[in-house]
Length: 92
Image (tube, rainbow, N blue to C red):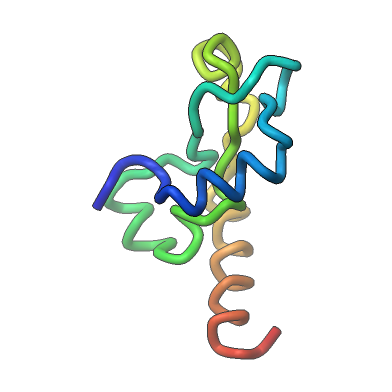
């Protein structure tokens, strides 16, 4: 599986942020996984890991120096995963 977001997710993040970094007024340079995209998280949170809710568009300097500010916990990811599963199952 790709380590980056799928193109359609990048577009969603870009559009939701109007093309600008969450932290400054610079254009988005890269897309950051708020919950790290690793094998364990992909297995535990298959719907959430590559969803726009797990993404943040950041400028180069912000990604390098401030991305830690946008991390989320596994507990938060569990809530998002359940929400996405409920939508998938037609419960929302």
